[in-house]
Image: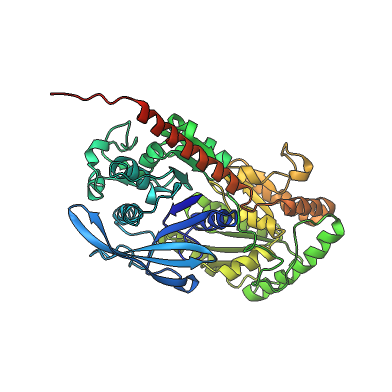
Length: 517
């Protein structure tokens, strides 16, 4: 199968959040299974170009459109760990992707709709006909719309289109004139049955357009599929998703178990195996090796070297992630005799300042470390050194940190929402079999919920050794690799292709009625 992904992020070259990791892991597994995969991205000036191999010009003189104006684009090709990547470089007077950032510009809608039009224009002009066009979140949700409304009329055909929703909060609301700029008549889509935003009826909603026009729509966990069809999880599009539920499917994300592997991790002072441990003695040996990483982390961060458990948070500091609950967990952990490590960054100036003050407050404490940074090496060391990872998200489409924590023998403490509810099962309250219980959960995103789960975890760590060792053993057994999710995507692709094939067959057998005026 020939698969083309069109997206705004890809690890490790252009990463902001989980979308980048998901696209990288899924694409690698699809290639491993023998499929041909290409990924189309903007050529950001802030990409990690050192991660690209064999960067070269693939296509010159690709003209695309911004309203009545035409602009030239250069398409570059490169390889990343065996993945073929195509990079769109617009020669546009607004320097769309030469801003030093991936998101956060006042004209993000303009930037990514231009990219979406140019990406499909490239596929059309280059004569590429993938079996599947797979797009991700609002930045590329206009691609299925453009394909259906414009490019099929030009004779361009692909097998099918799939949209993956990684986060419902961001939807790409825009004025109808935005569609005019990429070749469609925007006002024609300002109706409830098309792209009109349910909450702001004078605006279009790009994500809604993708949901309505893609052949299949996925969310990044089964539980999130249910949540997006409710007022709490749908962010205004719940009715649209309910209406399209027959083509909606939740597929649980995976992690790259080669990159997140404590047995091979180059960032660790002491490597150790976690899969297939079958006895308390083996778990104790694993903990001895974790202890060496814990010692290294404490030395690096200036924490006291004692027997206190380390609770960690590795996260973006945005409202979705419950930063006020992370602050509460820090205070609660120290009050219970533990240590706390936070690694995170925030694009919100006020929140960054708030955590800078927290950083200064605990700088000389020896019991807590607050690091406002994106540090890949330090993240690996924290996962290996910590005893517990706190994830108090208000909502979480899937979440990857809980999977990484379990891979590294670190117990997750998580709010039961989205993909967290699909992957973390409470040792005391879950209805799952004992062998599947792997952490501590709470239902309500408040201080009492955090206290209830965190206090039990700290107590069991200190006073229930056999229970703690069994919990670790159960958590480390779980395989979160992409080998489970990739076949589900391939099955979904076949559904999309068959749907289109049936539609073409039906149209071919329906007699044309000529209207004579």
